[in-house]
Length: 228
Image (cartoon, rainbow, N blue to C red; front, side, top):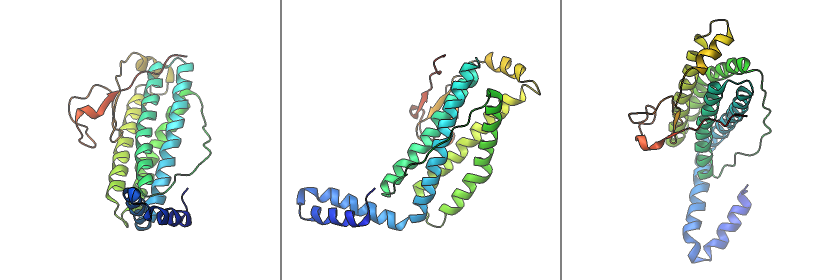
């Protein structure tokens, strides 16, 4: 972490060294951004850890599904994990421009059965859609950092995709998880994720990203997790 005193000291040294003028300008620009968007930085830290925690949970859910021989559900969870990491990485890049460290946080990952993990994932996705991101966007409005708002909108819409996929899976089974698993394992998903916004689709896309509208070239196919 670069405290203000050390920043000023470093800047004074750089001022005496003409070859470092571009670096000095970058540091001053970053400090100005940090002072201009203090609330945005705090919100982005929260969003970064929210997505990082989700990413780690989905990786653990995928491993559990593999152990229980639900290969397609494991593939779904691993795809969600990649999507969440796209969001987290985007927030981290913005935090770097604001000279705002994300810090360290101990993440406790709780894993149940695959059925329990699906239900938990559905609840968490709904929380992101209905509570977390609406609150985040409201808080960001006061400082109007355009890219922060755009990235949070991307994540919000991406979570709607996640929730829809989980809901579609769960509706097949009624009250019996065994029938759900049998139906899902008979499918052949082919997940692709957009590296710009984290949009997730279950087949090779034929049009620009439905969330960020970037070209098809920004989608990439996700490999299935290796069987245990």
